[in-house]
Amino acid sequence: MSLSQLSTLNSQLSNCVLCGTCRGVCPTFDVARREPASARGKVALCDALLKKEINISGGFIKHMTECVQCMACYESCPNDVNVPDIVLAARREIVKENGLPFIKSLMLRNFLDSERLMPAVMKFASNLQSLFFKGVPEESGLHRRFPLPLVDERRLMPPLADRFFLESVKESGECRVESVEQKIGSLGRSRYLNSQLSTLNSPKVGFFAGCLINYMLPNIGEASLKLIEKAGASVIVPPDQHCCGMPALGMGDVETAKSLALKNLEAFEQYKLDYITTACATCGDGLRRRFKELLGDEYPERVNAFCSKVRDITELLVRELRVGSGEWRKGHTSLGSKLSAPGSVITYHDPCHLNRGQGIKDAPRELIEISGARFKEMSHPCRCCGLGGSFNITDYDFSMEIARSKAEDIKNTGADIVATACPGCMIQIKDGLHQIGVKTKVLHVVELLV
Image: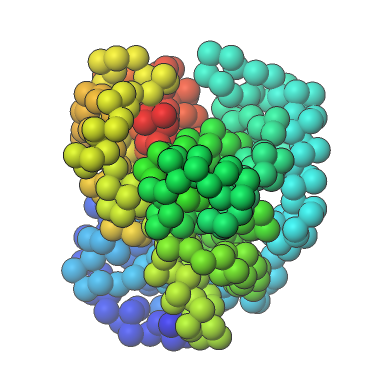
C-alpha cells in the first residue's frame, strides 16, 4: 500500500461524524482550545480543501503543522478515521504546491540525504558547540550563550557526542559479524569450541541506530549491543545506514523519505539477518510500517522481507531473545544498572510511536521489572510528551505546554527515574522536567540492564 494522497482519502474524511471524541485526547487541542487544533477540525479543513472551498493558505499550513502525530485521535475514534495519515497527506499537498522552505530543503535534501555531508556537518557542530552553548552539568544539557535562530533561551539542549555511535562502531571493527570459519581461524578451534559453540546457531541481529542515538546518545546504542550479545545473539551494525526518513515524511517531503528508505533497505538486505532492531520508537515505526507505504508498490517482496524482521529493542529482548526467562536469570544474577541506585523508584513513559504505532506496551515494563527496580505507573503514561519531530523546533512554546503535563505527571509519581524507549521522548521529557525544576533522571529502558 502506497502512502496516501489527500485526494484518495475521501472515504476517510466522510467517515468523520464530528462526534468530538478526538478532542478529549488531542494534546494540541488541550493546549490551544481552538477547533482547528483538534483532529476533527483538521479533518474538516482537509475536506474543505478537497471540495475547493478553501485554498492552501498560511492559516491552513499552520493548522496542519499543529499536530504531533501522536495517533491518540485514531486510537479513540469510533469510526477509525486515520487523522494522522490525513494530516501527512495534507502536508504532502502543501509541499507539492508551495515547495519546501529553504532551511527545511537544505536540511532534508542536502544534509539528511547525504552519505558524507550529514556526518561532516554534525562533527563540525560537535567541535564548535562549546562556543555557542554553555553546559548545565547537573542536568547534562546545554543552554545557548547568546541568541540563536530556533533555539529558545529556556531550551535545555542535548549535547552532541564527542564520538558518534557509528563512528565508534566502525573504528572498533564491530560492524560485521564474522563467519563461523573466520572465528575458528582467528580464535583457534579448541578455544572456539569451548567458548563460542553455543552461539553457532544464534540469531543474527542487525542494529539500526537512528540519528539521535548516533549523534547525541551513543550510550543507548552501546547498551543495546551489549544486551543483544548478552542474550546470546550475534549483532551487526551496517556502516552505510542512513536516517530512517521520518523527519522528512513528517514535513511532507515524501521523495526524500523514499530515498532514505531505499538506502536503508539496501544497507541491511546485504546481510543474512534474522531480525532488525532499533532502540528508537520513531525509527522503529518508520522501518516497520512506513517503509511499506513508501516502497511497497515498487519493491513488494524486498520490503516485506525487511519489515517482517523489524523489532523494537524491548520487543526483541523480551519476546525473541527471551531475556528474563529462567535460563537468562540463571546466567545473569546482577541485572541492576550502575545508573540507578538500589531501591530506585522508576516510572515509564509510553512513546506514541511504540505504543500506538507498533502496539508495544508490555515489553518495556517487563524489562523494568527484570532490572529489579521498584516500578510506579504514572497517571497518564500514554500521554504524548509533545515532541512531534520538527514541531518542537518550529513551535517550541506550544510543544513545552504539552510537555508540562507530562512533566507534572512524572513529578507526581515521586520517581527517581523516568524510563522510556525513545531517544526523542527522552530529550523532550528532560527539557520539560527542567522547565518545572524537577531533577528526575531520564533513561532509556536498556540502560537499566547494563
